[in-house]
Length: 116
Length: 111
Image 1 (cartoon, rainbow over the protein chains, first blue to last red):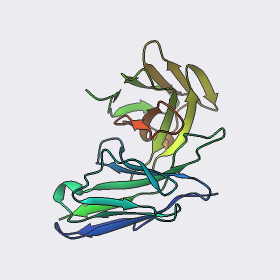
Image 2: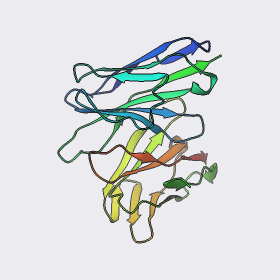
Image 3: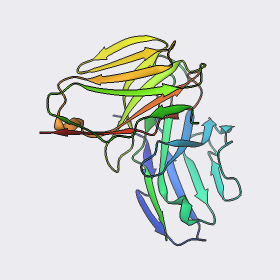
Image 4: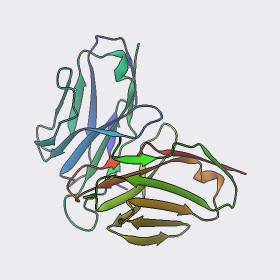
């Protein structure tokens, strides 16, 4: 069964350090999302890609966060410098833009970040 | 006020009970409605997907959408301890826009 792959699963870092998360979506899925989920809350969108283009990054804190999907396949989310409030689960999801399953988001297992 | 409101629980029920989970929303443009289940330290997995109003049934799960009231529900029949998880409602105006999630309801099914 096709899955969204994410790495690393867990990351512990000190504040002011740089961190990066990687995501490989389900093959053929043109749309890729990065969500942040703080413990006890629902996921909140950080950025949405359609192929290699950013569709929505209105909630991405651009002073410290960046995301790219250079070839329209896998994607990297970077935080520099990390702050204590960035401790959360970072979830990648992908979806097909057409067909019966359009709009269904398939999530990876997430990358749990702890900032000390 | 959040666009999607969901009671965080926790909701504790005995095995075999019927569970009702609910969300309300404020954006009348929402057309796609989904329920995700999330086990601890895992990513959300899709349970039910509904377009516009009406009911949808899949095994022990039934999803209902009442757009006139801006209210959606998920019913779980014959609940099992393995159903213990956080249930997230999510919705979108189109199939091309990102989902907006509720905060999740934590469900515990006691054996």
